[in-house]
Length: 130
Image 1 (cartoon, helix red, strand yellow):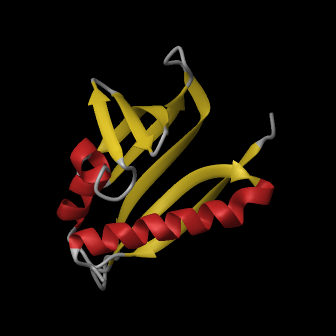
Image 2 (cartoon, one colour):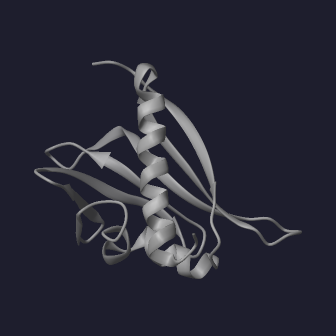
């Protein structure tokens, strides 16, 4: 299996941290922009896109600030990969941005970044931050 590398992207978002947190931490919020549908059972979230689905465990969260989902295998065991969404607020300007931490193979980082850009664009439309 090809090794994946960690990468980070920051997106400015015109939103309150509290509203943004609802869209990154709840199944209903995530299904509005991240996946076609999101179901949760306990700490496990199932992300559904067209005919495929992936399962992740909500590994950690800090209310109003960040969520971290660890991808799991078919036996619900954590894999080494995760994605994290951090809400950053500039202390001086109070500008809000969303920091995405994810993993991709080196030759797919550009494609993965573009996918995140499209998804964050959808998120901005949903919350009226365009």
